[in-house]
Image: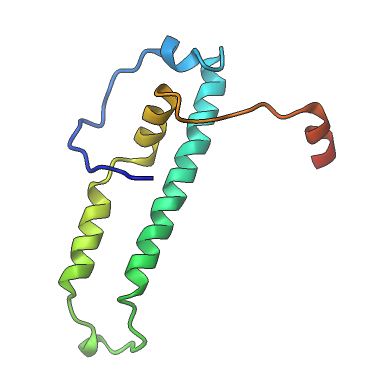
Length: 111
């Protein structure tokens, strides 16, 4: 997955009919988008944690903790990424998100 930094405004008017079209129900579409946004968020968080773990210090002494320019640049990059919900909506509208309905047998086996 490659995410591009974006300077697009965070407020965009969306056509509810386009959002509802794949599922025939706007609420079901919102659930799908929400689940995808959580997946994207979790992936980004994991990537950031892995990159920042390289800079983790085993010493808790404040005098030995110093500013690391590379660490700051990594953090700034991730701050500039589009929000996971924005990524999820774009993917959903571009038919890049696959979803399916659970079978009744799956639902009964979980209970």
